[in-house]
Picture 1: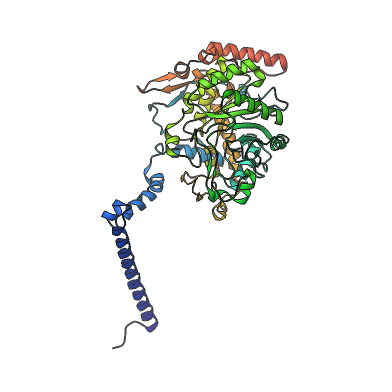
Picture 2: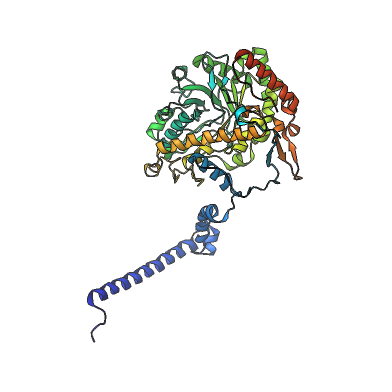
Length: 531
């Protein structure tokens, strides 16, 4: 009997049946092989007791982080940054409307929540004041008048990809903020955007080391002669890994990166856990003075605060030597800061968070009469206006962020920074993955994020009744305690400066400052001095 199906179709069906049987057979063979492998191995108890099926545990554990982000986690649940925070950065960097409707999704009774104290007579738009550039290193041959209170924190070329550094540099130039190189040295890509650069000197002294790994005055002088490099920062410690040096896996150490850093290519780049030549506050002040003398530019240091008695000792030594010996700035990094790679115990449990360490350092600075001489920079997990404004209330002169700008570049918080597999091209040197990151387009997003951050911090300041963000004081913010009630920051951390604790004293200080400005610039328009 002839087939009811035409010949070509029958042949195709026979082929599909054969292919189906082959695939099923291959699948069964794979399962048998995996069963034998699992039941005979002795490294994993789950796979030995539950061969083949036990493997799904690891598959689901791997996929879980992605499913949680997109399907299960609420807007305010994720760590280290939740969806609401990331979406604010995304809209700000895209230049989109950042208003929300109906009401806040944030639980305002959780301990640690910030309340800013609004004024019954907020600052009118006509009375707002531009935040003036602040001079860092007034005793240097080449002091730096920093134009922006919000800037880009240290991220090395090597930890970041070439297009990411290019985008940050160009975006910083557009926004008028500085870009910190991180401890990996300055690359040609840092300089492409013609932005202000802060050169960070890590414990391995990448970019300023000689053949033996010691600090090279020749290289320092060359960097000091570069007009785009404005300051030098000695990194004593980092928020995510205090007491541990930087880690750049061998897979990221290309020939180009090795040449910039002055190290062998293709080998792990691991910095010492501290500067071998700095073992006391006297050594630190000596090193600051030396770098400042060679470069002629402001020099400060970055640290995570744990023990803090050494800061008192340092300022006492400064008083003995003279105020010109003081560091030009101190960058306080938070114990919950970020990094590309760090041991979990250090990341989770070492170092004070910025909310506690920042007012502590500010108090020490003020007790020693160094507020105008030593600038204070806050760093660590401040990617939204509330965090930045709270740091200014706590005494910071500047705030720097790294991960906020990574989100502006397109980071999706995949937590693959140390794997060279970053899907957005930000922390990978895989050309295929880098292809998705267009430096020209991302530079605009970087600039938008910085500009909109400053704008919305100003909105908070105006709501509190001050004309510009640096006039924010500790009494302008309250923090929710364990009992659900809020307390003013100036009661939690009383300041030696009366203007931080008392609105009347703040108004008096503002009046004196206004009179000083008026005397120097009699044609200037005055702004309200209300606290």
